[in-house]
Image (cartoon, rainbow, N blue to C red):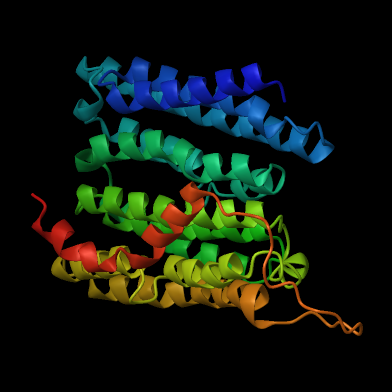
Length: 346
């Protein structure tokens, strides 16, 4: 891809996200989301592979439908209340339409079908943008409108997302699809606490990005797209594949790694809200995700490929790991001791 075109796409991507995050008018928020959609399309289809073109087409159609719903929701609210302010979404029909539109944009169940297919059709770096940066503006809109949203609907969608993200990821062999279902499952955890503690949703999203970014960067470094190649990739950069296991376990939410923190805080908050059965169900559903993370970790670090030729294993390579990757790896594994600072935050 032309470097100038790539720079223009990435700049437009961050511009669109900034417009949506900082706006308080529905039309400006919608404009930012449209800029985002148009900016990511060249990055999805840059390989000119039929699968990439198909992914770009699907992404455009899905996002266009979601944007139309979002615009319809804001116009309905303005028609009945005379308010274009994002925080003044009070009409029940508008709230329902907005929940649907944002769920489509994020890939929450039952509007999740597009996300794994599109992630499978793109490169790992574009998949990283789709799984992290492009989810931030819709989540911001959900946070701004959280007092008006229906808690029962969000809880039902959240539990369904956690269940489907776990179940559907079990039989996958493609790493990008596994990470897509992992994203759907984590979105369920964010949605379940949104109405009760919006700040906790934001913390969960930040920590999810912090844990997902190094996994995508590591898989891109060792050029691994499916489980069969992962089991033979451990000799390329052994220290990196060894830390990949810890990153995957952190994403699964095992203590004493970073990923345990959001799950712990969400279960604590649900218990305070007297939603203990819901907390129990979503905690049990996270075990499904733990299974396929363990399978990924097993393929990456514990199995040895069958090899009949006796030769010296290559334990050291000349490849250097980028500083950005190592920084994110450290943060994704070792942030749990900082949890008292989060509790102390106003």
